[in-house]
Image (cartoon, rainbow, N blue to C red):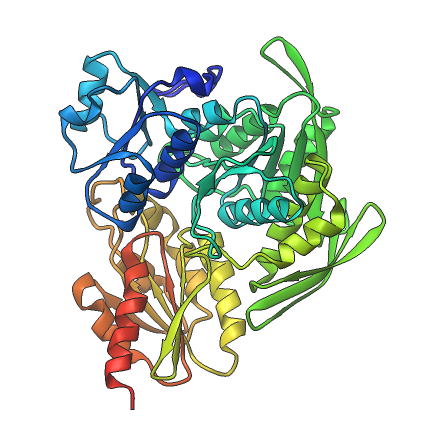
Length: 484
């Protein structure tokens, strides 16, 4: 795929050809991963971000030259400038880089350069890709494979989101939102689900489906596609690849792609049965190649059992890891920050935070929280992410929130977008049926309002990809101050 800004079909550069690397927006989850990996690969790394953070301090300590604020002088000495799709063309550093003839790469192209020469596993999907990437990383580490990895979130156990390992495998979370997942050409690809998201980029669901097909067909000859049989879009993709005998013509070669499906569906190659979620744990019986395994996880939710199964297949069928070691490694996984992450308890209220921001993710995380809350009240605080997503999916987002007893909807977190007339968080609030609904447009007063709404015995779930994550600690502090 070639866009107005990037050619994702171009051959990856060897990492040694990147030279000195400057990362614009270095504090972001994906961009900090690129910076860490480039440092560990021996590159001179600099970067800039709009505001200071603990991530920037850690990168500085690791050897990066970090600047707060954007300035054309920050790119001095850089051979390659790395950006994400969120960096606008009028960014002063990007303007200076293009004027000076510097090489400009999307972060996916930089990751592809770092992965060159390694067996790569790329994980894509509208929902679950961060958790699946993290689970696969931990399972391979436990099995002794020492993988390199780049995750769009931090492992709860170590705080790491990226590292170069000594093994031959690199595990990459592949972002489908802007077509950049086509840059990797993996040996193994996981597609957790295919859903109508990121329509601001693709325009139609049909275009989304074609992009995933191109992703599957970018798998290297002899590679493996792992697809979820329980998701209509992913299952359809698996059939499209399998119906051609796993053969796709491209770049002058014939690609023979193996396909392994997973899930509870009776057609799945690797089956899940007897799924149970109790408290902050989940378990199921996993059957693969005639063997049964008791899959036990220290994270809740049936969706996480599916994520773990995808990771199991990639590790065993794709990377050759021993099955029992992978099952044990998955049991040792303790979560990823901002993915159903416990934040604490005060005044009898338990608070959990999650990054969910599209309808499928929101529905899954709220359903898991509903089971965990039991007879207690579930209070969901939701912050819509992107004006375009709020406009397109307000009703679907509301449907995912409706199992809550109390729903607090904040205004839209703009991220990379400019405001759209008439599009606010109130669009989601208006569609809610069942819960007690509060629309709080003033983010500065939200924590106080939420603390006043809670009661002892409540489970408070903060949901969204923006700064809603800051509300949980603020509410804990308020509840702690007024607790008996």
